[in-house]
Image 1 (cartoon, rainbow, N blue to C red):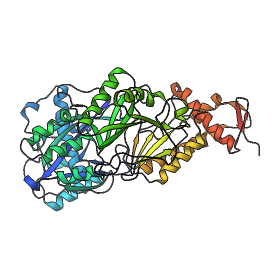
Image 2 (cartoon, rainbow, N blue to C red):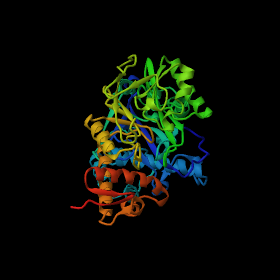
Image 3 (tube, rainbow, N blue to C red):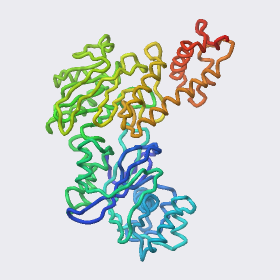
Image 4 (cartoon, helix red, strand yellow):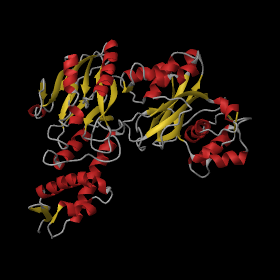
Length: 510
């Protein structure tokens, strides 16, 4: 969502900047985008533009060309100035392109050597600037919209985008690290790849590409309007073509505050996990569904990943309003009325669009016995409910409905599918999916080792094992941690490595 520049976001946002780098003109207009590597924590495997977080030193970059920022004192002015400087620094650090330099640039060999020094952290960009006496013209970067990460994400950024032409004689390059690759691409080609399910990226990338594809006339103005365009008639978050993420404010377990409802498909859609029956939240959801219906996407199914109310509360209202069939695992059907009960391996067909939208049902118990995930083979996308969180932390496994052994088995099963992208019910969608799943399994194994180390021959209740088993967990969350601790103990008991005596636990005698 965009807001006026004079309004500064809350401290929970991290200031950042991004550069829409372009070359050519007319039909030959290209933009340079990058692929985020699997090593980064934010949007791994997603397409992006050059950019990053504002550093404390960015405000000191010598910069001319924006008179209204001379002697700037307001928070908004300082934010804009620091963001421009960040954009210049990040362009050089990530691609070796030096934007806005006043005066002649160094020759290609010198510039490459300086880039290597900065990239290898032998010198900071600020040090190079000071040593060479560089100054920069801020007018080389034209404002291209202010974007803020939606509320569902665990890490949120307040990002100023800028459009800039690559300077003559310079060519962007990417060395593998935080970025996996970079390339020039024609905006229409990028959008075509997106429509065929080959690319995943956040809303700012999509709307910048749309503006570029519409031509150069009034380009900066249209780029700057991207946040407003994306929010009309609803806040559209379509990271993959045919997958619209609609966050709903719910009451999940902390630290989550929202449940991600997904509208999936083209000619027909399924709605996954409408988790709120609040009239205001439902009104926003209905606006999204109606707007997509006007594009030819009709709601056919409401699919529920499990029985928790932050996934099911809006299902009845959606059934009544749209006549959509409510679908869930047969065990969920023992708790609420379903129009279609499914089992592992079943397929949920949707009328095809550019590609097929058939979804395979995977029974993935562990968080609950009735948990399912949806697998889309064409795009190698996993809609995983509460199986995998989209951010830091882990899933609570609460016996007897929760089962740690079943949970680890479900993780191993979906990892074997080698998904490319994960769409979780809470937090941010994730690329580098297999790496993320293996990390979740490793985390559980590490926790299991801590639980086992906390046990000894003296039988003690689970609460007495918490401090040693969960040393990294705040005490205010211990009530939740104790439930997952019990799940670990039950698995250890099943494996013959722990013994229960009433409510107390000890090591298994050899």
